[in-house]
Image (cartoon, rainbow over all chains, first blue to last red):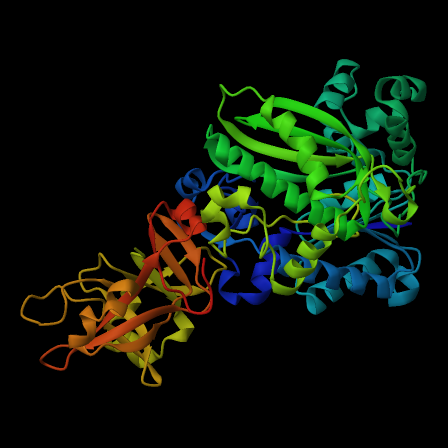
Length: 401
Length: 156
């Protein structure tokens, strides 16, 4: 049996651990800019506030709501505590995301000396008592069923699903399946597949043709055959991206360049952290959250050098249409390779120059961005405001965002 | 500026609740939430819960009485305080106790409290003033206001 544990309104629950006064209060956690709700309590959800709502709409929907500044480091501390606790009751745990984990539930009854449902409730109580976070747990023969189970049990429920679960699958819309997005759901609806049971009963080859091998894996999983196993270590990334909002729309070329350079420096930090080099660099520029420009440049050699990535990004940036205000930007390192597995070159500069290493060493010692490119000077409000650090929720080791 | 704060009901001694009739200011954000006491600048009698000289006091929030020689204001800018303009009033540091603050319709969490000052007028009546500073980008986006209180142990 496979278990799926999912923390209920995780960010808010983390805040409630250290702030008793937030308990029972309609509460929203705000994102990096302080503008959007990135997580909300069930009390706030009841007023119709959704993730992604801007604060000026959220405060109208719920005038008594309290908004909290995000603290991803604290959330990581709690997330890792949950991971470590789970490892004490299960031989295999997959760190799926900051608030979701899959685990091997075969030992659960033995550990708690209880029948499976009671043992699952005991685990839920243990997490609540030791970590302080309410969780929902699904137990099933496959990952997909386990996740469906925990999702349907929210908030603070447990759901043990057997292989024969027709009534349950009939009650679940096919869009609830992890891996079925709105486009896939539409394709399935067009073929009269509306519920998870319809999906399970559909022709396997038709599903494979329609949704590739991943769709077929879901088909098997819904039948209780565990096709997707628990992964205890994270496979190497296919790409690493850094970017996001440019702090409001801008057409100022100096600010746009400054954002690009800042994102390059953040990307190099991430490449250093994961011990990889990039073979390709892509630049995505958005206007009003719509892709305005996407460029891709191969690097001469796998690299994490500021100079080399800068030289790849800037021509792409210069080619960007200038008649639209830029709202978001992402710089993406692709075709990654481990640092200890690259062929040394006689003809090109090192993958990282001594200057890159010196900059990294100083910043590690004196603080992030203690040394940074002078091209980031137009973003003085970002660097001079300690609270505005554009942090992201990037925790190494977990499988997805 | 911050135009309102709340403090948890259980953080205020019963004798102060009774003395200042704070029951009227009790609010509860949901059925399961803690009771709070609301202190708004627009109240007929604006008050602040202030930790001063080792205990919690409920003091007038700023001064709006012209017969008092305390400054006719609600708050004090840090830069003004540092320039020495307020030194004639002999300000004393104090901690304004608060769980949540209100700014332009947005309630936000306050972890430890807000820095304030106490000034006594010619009749030795104390007044509490909130210290303000230019707001961070985050606070400005969140509330739409360019000044924020000086928070204890954090900057929002």
